[in-house]
Length: 281
Image (cartoon, rainbow, N blue to C red):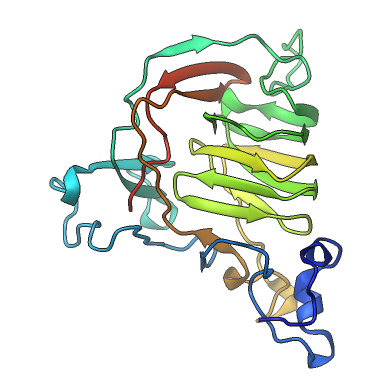
């Protein structure tokens, strides 16, 4: 671990990968030393993580019995008949089913965000206060296109989670670190870093202070690493340079939560009496 950068804020003012290699004086390390979480390295890999050892059932195509009475759920982002190379899925073992909530209610539109960039769109619609759409192309209901947003926030999400059902978010903080809690674990994202939150995943953003940045949203596809091409065997972004969270769960009782869903650029809300981040493995 580096010893020369004692002020955590120094890591937000320099590109830390370059700094760790400077003159060979500072040892190379994967994380900024003020990052409190553990990760698994890789991009587009198959990951496995348990907060309690022995939870994941092995040797079963479709788990029927899970230890501790946990519910087995599968999150899929591809067709059932998709080839293995393109078949995306994740198994989550949680304390309560994700469908255990009190139903949906529609929320008012936020005029600052947008998802439909076709000529037939007569007005601007989308959903989150603190988000503002800059530009885009296509429509999420057609599973094709992109949108670019800026975000501005000065307080953490309290007992509230967000689900983007339209596409994947690539979040680029410009100011202020983001402590992002997801169903797969926690991420600590600082300026100079990027973070991808996939479509359909619940997440909650906590702050240490005011934060702002940019978001690229893609519809109908997932982010992939570029081909190396003329760079040869070594590129500027290798799979090991990307980190995946490890399981971190919270199980609560009589704890009211609101889950905000973005679908077709509109807001919907469901409520439930337990934390959505109860995934144990």
